[in-house]
Image (cartoon, rainbow over all chains, first blue to last red):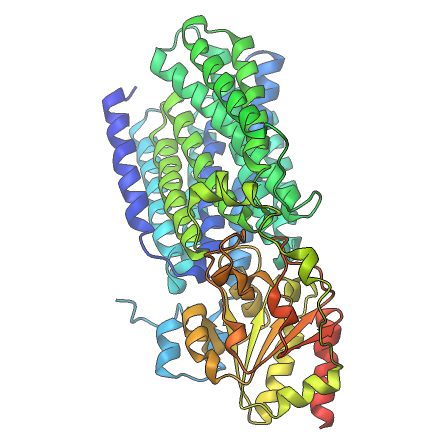
Length: 116
Length: 461
């Protein structure tokens, strides 16, 4: 068992990490980012599996299995749908337009290495 | 969680790290796709570790339940048209909240009598907020799918009912701590489900995306609380990350719409849902409508055309046809740009996804500020299936529900052309004076049909 204070510490630090990581995002990415974050909380599936594995009696087992189904939908569906959205920002589409300097800075081109 | 072996904990740490890096990746265009895949990898790792390291009863049932989840989730995610994306994300979020609430509930049934008070309170939090997220998301789904009215739903004394239900929820929740009553926790869950519905009903359709983002943050916190109940650092980290990032994102979205979160949830739309519209007065005013040939001439002899796409374009699946029109015009030497409002479509960034699907080059996309500063030099603003995002009453009419929302100043262009199916108001349900402006031409019909006719008419010139 981890102590409450340790868990609280982890919680507080995670809040700051969450704020920092998403400090500045272009509106272009709001939808995929929301969808991706949505998929990440699908990891509640881990919790659902654990409680389902310890459940006793029809009520507990039934409820826990419902949780497993719902969490799986959240997690798997979330990542798939986010990937489908982001798939549309392929570099090949962008190159076709030719490469003005202005474009270079805006385009989602995973191939270019000048991120920093 | 019983899997306390060091390697199990290390694997969960790796998964948590994946989630952090994934969110970071998702916030920049170049790294977004990799980020998402990394998040998926972290999730798969965590689930695999849970399955092999824990001593699980009912393993076949668990696997079967996961198979059902995959069988439902993957086809839904694959098949949804890009236009239906916001609803689907809302739905996925809702079921996640429901799952987190159910997890906390089962854990309470199992060991609620022996848990410390802090754990019971976290359980109550998880059940309440998870249930709010579940039904709240279902209502947003219904609104976006237009299964119900997209207008704010208010009834007499609605605020008091909402506040009352919320108070009952909290009261019942606190009572669970001393009594450890399972029936009471079930009542709390029901009250939470009711609160979720009441919470979202008064929100206007145009503001629903912000609510989805907020509920997403709620679900994150629910997962974190469930993680505390289960003594799982992974769930605490992942849930808190999403809760914090979701809160930031909600504020960014609200800012993009020029509205505060409080006014979205409790304010403007509920009080002025009808007062701000001058609907009956304006709708009798004359409108100038034109045929495709008239509009084609206007476009073909323009020097600069700005296309302002809206949700109607997406509904008509006209992304590709609008690009065809742009190509034909550019072949004649017309400068064509797209003015993309931050909340065009149904969610911030939604229109960018749709235009990317049609392979419109990024260099032709202008964000709102750029589009507005170029608008006075624009000959024709071609508004395709948009309405609220070019409604000048957002600038002028203090009583209007969308007052203060940043808009694309289509009215600053020399000519305005609306491709619209009818004079029906937009998603926010309010009238648009620009439709009656003398320099505005209406081309009625399905966006895709109208665009195809325009392409043919321009080619024939």
